[in-house]
Image 1 (tube, helix red, strand yellow):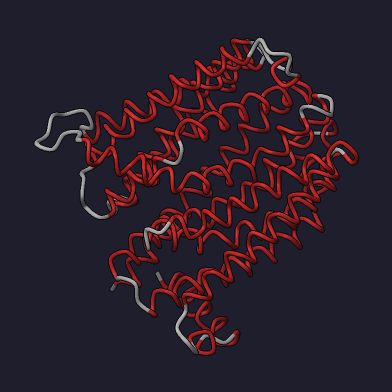
Image 2 (cartoon, rainbow, N blue to C red):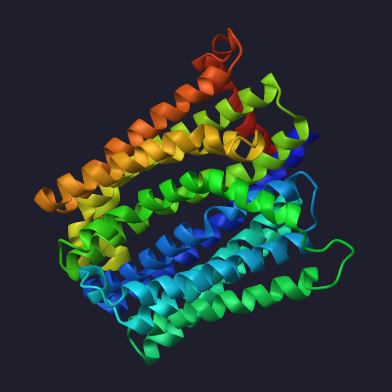
Length: 434
């Protein structure tokens, strides 16, 4: 019964996220074609800045809120209040920091206008609220509603971006359209789940203290995720033109779309394992998910080797054909990031031990910054790609070793490669029968 429920929830969430990925990709295609490589490069800088500020000032507090909700220590109304409060504080700090540094002689801030950076911050933090409330719903088992709303958000974003860029083809229009779609979805959440109604349980200092402490322990995870996604854009903005930056950002955006698959699996896996407890069986379940992702990555890699030329031309046009070799090599490294996802979720959200992987992420973060600043000035886009491959691989190896150390003696031998293949076959057979 539990397996059937897991497969049903996974299928439902996966199907919706395929729709979300397609709609999100269409949005990126519209932005890339109408803004052209130079405008797309400026847009990438703005989005990267918003992501960087949300990581620096928000510090992974979402993990603390989600952990309290997962353990039934708070309800969804409290979770939303904590989310709104912590996001508001982080946004205020981000705006203050921006005005303190914007007049410094830094090349990065010369790439965009003040209005573009402020709009990017509003978009970034409104996106945090939308994403986290959706995760709250999956924690509570409301997978159908979470799926519908996430797909609806991407549809609204696509619709508003098309209208805005047809009227005014600039970066500001794309950002305003995205903000508007986020705000509308936030109001849907508030109305449908009565997130602002008064309840017996209100905000208390103990919870807030826990959220910030847990968030700080998880900060290296969010910082590492940001670095993996945006450090290339950040460093390249100092050394290459906006046109080359636009080409790189398109390649990375296309490759990173595959990350929705492990994210979907984790969102279903975490509540399931948390309910079961820390058992050998559930660790085997994590290994099984890893094997599924391994076969997936191999399939995607061979697909990109054969069809990435046609894919980039069809989606983004001839202006972005230089991104084709970048797509192939970027995915070779990004695959290791995808394979690390089940282990990250196991330590950070199931065991409640974010400090275990914080050390790994701190090391890979330092390595990423060092290699980026050594290789990018000399080799530009190739240097950024080589850095990603090396860092993703080392991070994967370290977290895999750490997970293996948690297994009981002889546990690995119980899960031989053939038995894992059979397990995957049984799982897929159940999905087909459903």
